[in-house]
Length: 97
Image (cartoon, rainbow, N blue to C red; front, side):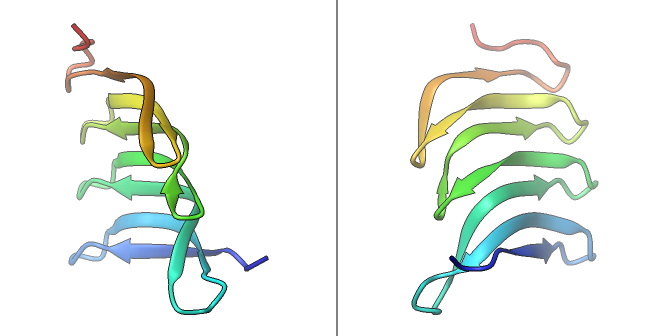
């Protein structure tokens, strides 16, 4: 099994844009996201978080507004949105209709 590494991709100003676990493909030619993934807004607040399994979104994912309030929550099943997704506006109001 390949060793996991943590990658950090910065914004131009040096703040972290993405942080995620990755591993080298078996043939050693490319990196594959595998494990925890977090994206950040330019202000440093979390923008999105979830998990990759062998390069594909899997399980619970959450997106956040730049004020820290939750924007969306739902499940991925092998890279496809699955089940009911819920959405909120930046004031925290449910916008699921």
